[in-house]
Amino acid sequence: MRNLLPATEENVRKAAEVIRRGGLVAFPTETVYGLGADALNAEAVARIFEVKGRPKFDPLIVHIASLGDVRRLAEEVPEEARILMERFWPGPLTLVLPKRDIVPPITTAGLPTVAIRMPSHPVALKLIGYAGTPIAAPSANPFGYVSPTTARQVAETLGDRVDVILDAGRTPIGVESTIVMPVGGEVFLLRPGGLPVEEIEEVLGKKVKPYEGDGVMAPGTLKRHYSPRTPLIILRDWSDYYRLRARYGRSLLLLPRPLYGLDGEVRFLSERGDLREVAANLFSTLYEIDRMGYEVVFVLPVPEVGLGRAIMNRLRKAAAR
Ligand code: TXA
Ligand code: MG
Image (cartoon, rainbow, N blue to C red):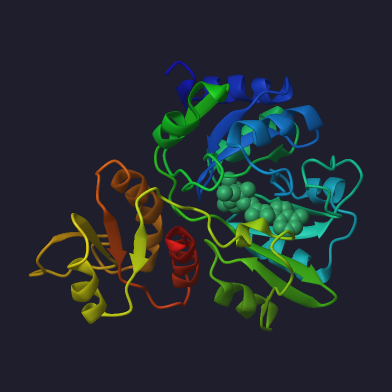
């Protein structure tokens, strides 16, 4: 594939030039690969929606490389947002803030707010810096499919509809950023992700509230999303497994930690039973599974603490039919 390039200094500069000219670049972040365009160029952003097949009501995250850019994009930065960006940026945290007019409506799907994040991946930071403009980027997958954690997955699903795909290997975190919206002294959780909510609460000294708005406000909250083609079933317990397995043909059991002596095909998402490793391996495993022809995949849940919240959120969406 001609557009799949190793993320060398020269190629990152070349990719930044593509962004400046209104093109599309898939690039690594610490969470997943993003499909980027100049966030302030409405035509360039329109191409993201086209290539992903993403509905126009689903707003994008705008990626920045310096704190100064927040003021260019956001009309207002509440105290809670300031504290969180100082503590967690660059990193897997997205803040939803009131937007300025410089951000075109297509980028935010017509919302009065803009989602902003400063990624910590060195390639992402360089790309944004060299482009000299904030980069709007959703995950680099066809709409509704699993987010990519390797450049090859991007190449296989989006192919030559992207001008450049920068390859820097696997993304370390493996699930998307945590999205929060500070409003009126409270902080609302729009999507659990790579930054555990507990860490946010500790820094703020108060609870993050569940967001009770509609699905249009944060379409990442659409029920079905992140879905592999292979049907996925979350087990309640072992008796579930034995009862359900008998009903299907070839199946796979996904486990958060090694467990031996089970009959049937089994895969571990972590060698150590570590949630960070489970998150890092989750999406890549789903991509692989889709090529293996199972009739169904069973998965045992993880506790919903720390990264477990993001992992279960993605698994439920993958399982929703
Ligand atoms: O880790 C990540 O966040 C990755 C990498 C590439 O940065 N990006 C990502 O983008 O996951 P995407 O488009 O797949 O998910 C962005 C989510 C969407 O579900 C969207 O609804 C929400 O962010 N969002 C964006 N702008 C918003 C806004 N103004 N208000 C509420 N939600 C917003
Ligand atoms: Mg996505």
